[in-house]
Amino acid sequence: MVPPIRPLPPLYYRVFKTLEKRIQDRHYGLGERLPSEDALCRDFGVSRMTIRQALAGLVDAGLLTRRRGSGSYVSATGARRVSAQMKLTGALEDLFAEVGSARVDTARLAEAPPPPEVQGLMGLGDGEPVTVIHRVRAIEGQRFALTVNYLPVALGRRIAEPDLYRLPLLQVLEEKLGGRFQHARQTVEARLADAEVAAALGLEFGDPVLFVERLMFGRGPRPIEVVRSHYRADVYRYQIMLVRSSRAGFRWRRATRAARRTPERRPRERQTWQR
Image (cartoon, rainbow, N blue to C red):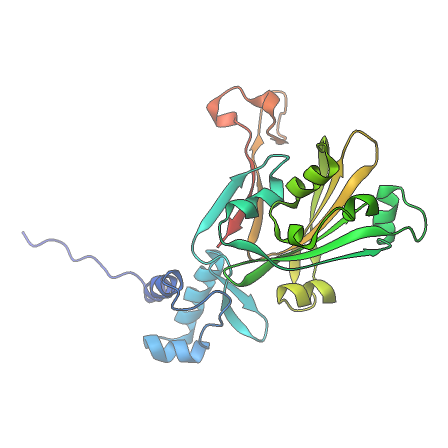
């Protein structure tokens, strides 16, 4: 019996898989612009519509990002994903410590009055200075995060320049403080890159970024440290596990340790660095 002839996959899918492999094999480097649609049409001998379908699939897969009027670029996500469980001593910062190739690209320390909203959070007087630490993080040469730490001058003056390049900085601060942070309050929101963030992360003004503010507390009511971070939206994703129960009705709630009744309900709150 002659086996049935299997139809070939659609053209756009074959183009998709070829480009996907090129990205995974680093034929196109991280952040590199792909050839134009016309060039890809000539390369594959297919129509522009076929190329656009393939590129759309790569964007959906997180391998490409599109910039209006500029073209398609290999996302800094690359083709691998590195995940880390959330914990107070970890959260955003420990994730990068666990990614072996993550490093602090540039860092600077100064004493200056903080922005008004940070001044209010820390309970400072008008014009009262704090230690301000700016750090840009990179992985495989791609800058992906700008973090600014605000902390009391008395603590900041104990920090030496080499400390700025250590990950996580939380460990450095606790060593200098001689104690432990008790808890933290973290807020995550979507924002648009201002001029400073765009310049630091290689973005265009107004590009979307993930903004994270974390308040670090000791035993007092005021935060000891305020941390503000901006992450490239094409390389960072925040995930939270939601659960339902008979008491929740049609509503979802975030998984907590109190909800750990079955293996399926183990709390999972994680941040995923995509490479």
